[in-house]
Length: 302
Image 1: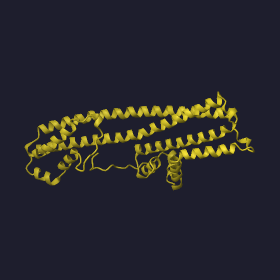
Image 2: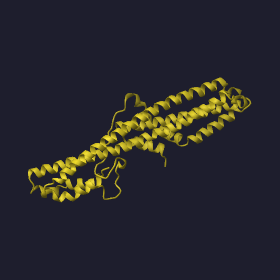
Image 3: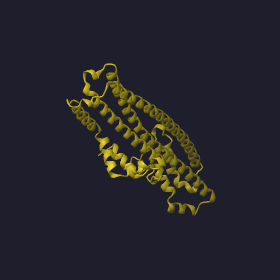
Image 4: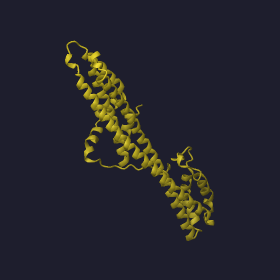
């Protein structure tokens, strides 16, 4: 949003139950392990599957064969757990998306009210403030055609937004002192009313930017839902193969590699979900650059 204001970072103390997570995330070795596991998870799962399959196929290791009933119970438990977790995530995503949409509409309606007030103030602009008339009209012409789908507004040039230029003019002490010397009290109050309306609009536009960032954060949970849904489908598939088709009778050595690989894959997916939830929690209650860098290095490696 405004290139003039820097986003304030709020440092908050985590709840007592998250103190362990904070300490672990501050450990360099743990960060390296998490980044490596999430970045190369497919390769890790493939290696685990091949190694486990080789060990289970050895003639002197019949104890590595998992009984059919144990395999069925494992796949059933994984399927039920993933289904319950997906239900919670879908409810959370639906509720949060509706809340964000409601706030966007409320801020948009408030912005329209502020624009109407600015138009009225511009129409009754005193002669002493005629120098600001062109900038005010430019701002009005810029904001009026905007619709809800056009927010947030990003700066597309080095010159900045008209709102930034307007605030620069109104906060230019040298220029305002020249006007104030020849202005009356009514003119001074009129200018303050305009400045108040413009500051309100700036705060609303910044809220649009924060809501947009919140949408991007929520979108990470959509990816988690997709991945957990895929794992749920895989678990149900093997439950069908082992429970009904009786795949283990034809391939007795396949049960252990499949179970171990699926268990590790589910654990990695849960780890990514914890990282997403932790990142969302830090942004909601106050963010810090350390957690931002850690999350970006984990999810989007160079």
